[in-house]
Structure formats: structure tokens, C-alpha cells
Length: 452
Image 1 (tube, rainbow, N blue to C red):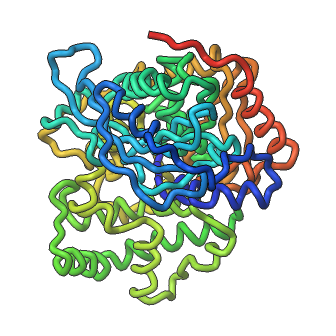
Image 2 (image 1 turned 180 degrees about the vertical axis):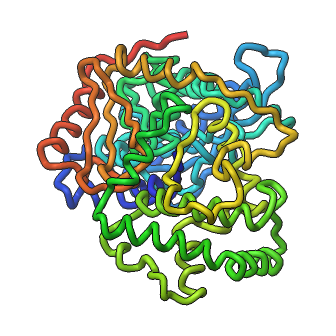
């Protein structure tokens, strides 16, 4: 699965306008003009939380909100206090202590911008953003990746909720998109009573890392057949012109003082991008993108620009790739990855297993796959998940293997023709109404009990 942050940030940025345009009911935030008391109760309450550091209050929040950047001291290993601590970056959009609170994760670094997610808009709630351990600035001094597990991250979220319930005792909803949606699900698996409900957008569920046929079938059938054929032809043409295009890639790296030490070479990075291009195309695809797929008579310039735009060539060079080592480590040790169709590229590939996560993690970092992690989460979602809404797009290959909750008050809803960047606002009217009603029902019912 290829996970992306762009869509979630875009959804957060436009959530208010999307909700308004779709006619979604949002609870009004407190009035922007209310005078602030001489004693800053919010700041005082934050500073009173043990282990929490108020880094700064930033301007730019919407009327009725204040935006804080925070640091929380967390255990490196929740099962071993002697393993030391690290500071986890948090962000807080505060509106009122008696409003619902939305626990938000991207699964990567937390954005330092005051933008509300869709559930925050719909509920006019507070929003607490949690940076994933080992991403952004939330890194232990020693990068011992054995502490980068879904359980350790879930325990991070658990400590955050327990601590901030002292300020926000009402209802809590967790949310995230893509890898952030997965993090929200994993948190619920290990601490199901921390929040009153969860909205997970575009969250993959790779149950068996050795069985990836669902992804291959999806990519062989998604969208118009003419677009699929054009993508395959473009892949072949790019590889047929490999020598010239890789030379251009190397020249770009030299000009930007970048290297390919992690992945091995510009040629391997290039081939990896070619293999991932259709998957990434469908993640972001709109009908207007179909005509932009270059044909076999396209110039080298056009082919290179299309590949770079579609498969993000810069991300495979070291300056960016090193930031995603934790991501690939998680895929290669617990979350699993996918297989893509390659029959149409016979005779053109040079690097076996080019898209395997192992290739994106330095060989000095040991990797051992835990084959029980994802089946355990999948069983929990099927049998015991409550108050969970999964929002997926029918054209998003990331959810070729979706979560399938089997319990009451938990469901999957699909945005017809939607890509990786779906919203509740994009659902069919009846499902949109149902989803918004569920959110309000979850926050207006009895609050989840605090658990140790």
C-alpha cells in the first residue's frame, strides 16, 4: 500500500467549505468575539499537565479557536520505563473544554498549521493532533526501530487521551486518513474505550502480506480500460528509454546535491518509480488526468515530467527517502506492502523485488516481519469494533483490501469514483446523512469511561 499525507491535509484545509457545500450539519463554535479572561485558563491548564511542554501558541487559527504547538514526554518503550523517553510533538486547536475533542493522526509528522479535519468541522470540536513516533521531531535520541510498533504507537495515543481528558472530559472521536486512519484503528484495537467513535479515511488493511492478489486484480480492473492500457504503454515506453531518462534523473540529483545511497542507485530508484506509477496515479486520479498520460510518441521531456509528477521521483533520493525510513520499516515489519502487475513489462526490469520495503531501509537496520500483527487487528475489527466508520473511494487501490467491520454501529461507506482523498461530504446523500448522524449520536451519548 502506498500511503499519502497530501489528501488528508487537503481535506482538512477545505473541510469547512466542503461541509457547507454538501449541506452537512455542523455545531456552531463558540463566538469569536468573546473576551479572553485576564487569567489565561487554557494556557494554565496545559502547563499543569505533567510531562507536557507548551512550545508556542501560533496565530492563524479560525475564529473561535486557539492553536498551540506542544511537546509531551513519552516512554520510548511503554513496557520498560528504563528505556528512556522522547518528546512527542502535538498540536491543539482549542475552542472550549465542554466541546467534543477530535484525536487526529496523519501517521507521519503532525502538520504545524491550524486546519480542522472534517469531523472537527462537523462537531465544532477541539482537535488534538498527534505526531507518530519516529516521524518529524518525535524521535528517540537513538533510532532503535524495535520500538516502532503499532502497539507502542497505540500506547502513545492512549497516554495522550488519558492526560488531556483532564481538560476535555467530554466525548472524543479519533480520525485520520491513509496511514493516519490505520493508526486510529490500531489505537482502538488496543485501547477500544479511549474514544467514543472513529472515522478512518482510506485506511488499508493488508491482512496477509504474502497474499497480494487483491491489489493486482484491482489495478487490472479499476477505471476505464483505455486509461489502464495507456498507463501500461507509458510504463513500457519509459523503460525503453531508460538510459536517457535515468541520465536525466542522475543529473537532477547531482544538481541538487542528492544521492541514492539508501535505495542503491538512480537506476533502481527509477525502476521503482515506474512500477509504482499506476498505483499512485489511481490514488490521485481525476478524469482530467486520463488524457495527460503520455503516448508512445511523446518526447523524453514529456515522459520524464509525467513520471516525476505521477510517481514523485524526488522521494527516492536520500534527502527525502531518509525521512521515510520509519514508514518503510513499519511496512516491512508489521503492516505489509503490495504487489503490482508486471507481466506487461517482461524483459524490461532489472531489479527483482524493486518495491519491497527492505530496499528503502538501510541494511544496518534489522527487519523481521511479524506475520500476526495485521491478522490480529483484522479479527478485532471484524468481531469487536464498535462505533467505527471507514470512508473509502471505489477508485483507490490502497483499499483493495478494506477493513470489514462485522459488529453493530460500525460500517464501511464508499465514495463512488473517489480516489485516496475522500470525505464524508463526498458520500451519496443517504450515506452522508447517516454518517453525520452517527457522529452526533456518538458524541451525544455517554462518554467513554477513562481506562488505565
